[in-house]
Image (cartoon, rainbow, N blue to C red; front, side, top):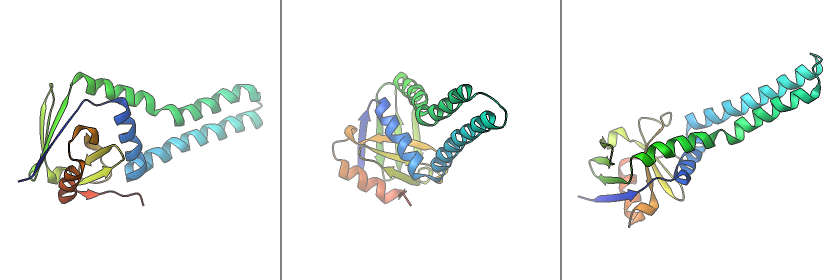
Amino acid sequence: MTWVEVRYTPTAADFREAFAAWGRRTAAGRRAWRARYMVAAGATVAAGLLAVVGGMALLPAVPLVLFALLTVFVSLRPRVRRVARVAADKGEFRVLLDDYGVVVDTAASVTELGWPEQRYYLETPGLFLLMAGSEDTGVVTMLPKRGVEDVRQLGELIERHAVALVLD
């Protein structure tokens, strides 16, 4: 039986890469990004309408547009910080993968997941992301490549048991 161990302490950069990949390469992520852009576009249009139709001065409408744009381009940072803080409290992650599934062991908990619970995966330059159910679900397990001795062996094991999500 083949098994691979991944040991790492998660970083904010890991979560940024994971969220970006999820946002680009899953249906749920693309919907979330579209919704964020729609909010920004709606706020911009509303500010323009208030300025033109409502007789509101253009100057107060500018902060509304700036706020909408900041929401789109900066909103991921607080989320990354929050998740990174929670993960830091758990200390080092030790993840064992074999032909039966995945065991995630931290100072706070031990979680066992079978491969049927992690049917999909994404690969980025620095991570493998295992996901449950469908591409509408979130990331279940993050596996930084820096935490494993043989990245090729890890990739082959994951590929045997999960389906890759590729950008369509």
